[in-house]
Length: 394
Image 1 (cartoon, rainbow, N blue to C red):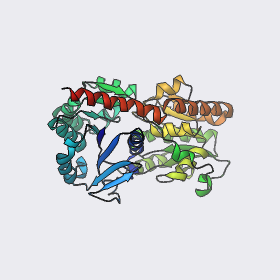
Image 2: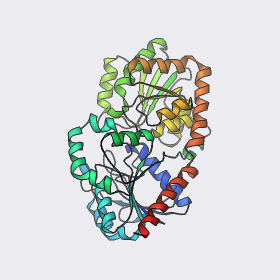
Image 3: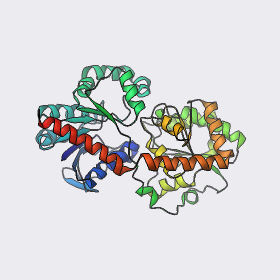
Image 4: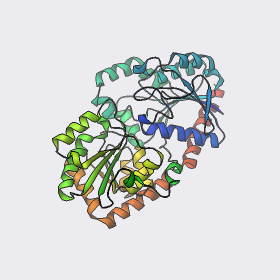
């Protein structure tokens, strides 16, 4: 089984958030299961380009990754990738596209059809309600009508990471030939290998401090307009608390976050760490008191899963795609994206150690049972086989 995965960005472009890790984790485990996986991607990163070899095969955990230079950043288009795709697309059994609104979906769909290959599109939350309505909504709607709708409808299947993502896709008036819902898997090896961490020591955070952790891209979508005022309310009840914001600024949004912090007069109680990787990331999860994500919309929420795996209590908004599963398994607190609801939920975790420990353990069990990579890889392997077999008889 030869699979081509087309995605605009890939490891080590960590600044693009959770999908960078989850897409590679999927490919890595597919290789372990016996699939031959090739990735076509660009060298784009949030603020420039990644330092990767170009025009040659790079093996990462058995995955064959080909990086091509970015030509047009706005559409994440690479002329050299385009040229190579035109030559090599016919050599694969199936093409998996992780992208919408960008060149990857249009090029992948075009060459799949040209060479009669099945293709899957993973929108990764980009076609959910909030992302479609909040920013550049008119441009996105025009783009969908003129270009993306055809790509999506031509796909052999659409891959959703949560039932909520599928529902909002349908509510947007978008159609599909077929679909399947499969969540991201958690490859916990990078978190588990650090038995002892020194996060607080590195960032000079006293042990007595109550650490409220926000880890992910600093983006409008993550709901800092709710988080900052909510934390200001928590601070009145627990003055010895600290909000840690770990992540890179997306489209310079950090300046807006700093403005909200200044308006609430809490600069001395907020720490920006920048993006955390490896031991620092594991330490942040293991040495904090509560993880928070008051997002407008999140198709899945990889950082939420990572926090729960580390037995860190989570407080998230209803915008998180797996919110209903969290409620059903009593694996965290899910509230409306409102200042008062969020501050009360955070305070509940901080003041009640027994409750905090309980939901932390429940979260760990929930993740272990639902997001095991070997089980989920088996499901997508089956989806690949089914589509390849279908096309072989057409």
